[in-house]
Amino acid sequence: MVRCSYRVLSGLCLALLLTACASVPGSPTATMDYDHSYNFSPIHKIAIQPIAKATLATMMMTDEQIAHINQALHAELLRRGFEVVTVNADADIFLSWKFLPPESDEVSTFDPATDKITGGTLYVSMIDPLNLQAVWRATFYSRLYAPQDSAEAAQYRQQAAQAILAQFPPNPA
Image 1: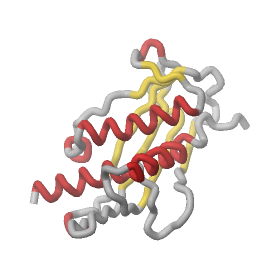
Image 2: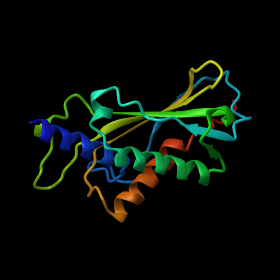
Image 3: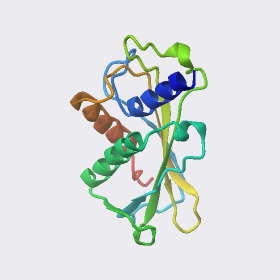
Image 4: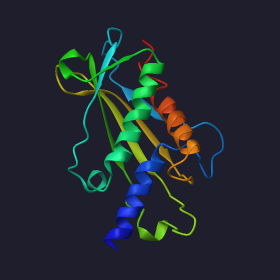
């Protein structure tokens, strides 16, 4: 039971950034909200924060799965012209993320014969380094079906990262 639950969460984490949506064709989308009073214009350097393995979902993730998500977000930030820094003191803002499988995703929603993964939600937050409060957040959810380790999966992770960061920084009103 524990091994099967581990397999479910592991698959969900890797598959989360895939965009092969079973029921909705087309490009992946993310919802976004932000602090409208925050000035995003001076943001050029972003530090991706390490993942604390303090929850069941993150404890079940492998280092490789965490690295895949971090790499996809890192690559998209670079593509969008941001500098990704490794020292928090050099950052204009911090990027933090967490993954949550839906509570209904139990062993019964995973079909080992087809490697069908039902999905999960990835929350990506931009955190002001001075007050340590989130000033921007994207939420990405998908019902997914895809192989975990393939060139196609890497492409899906890239498309998902693009969808997640598409509205960062937000346009000033």
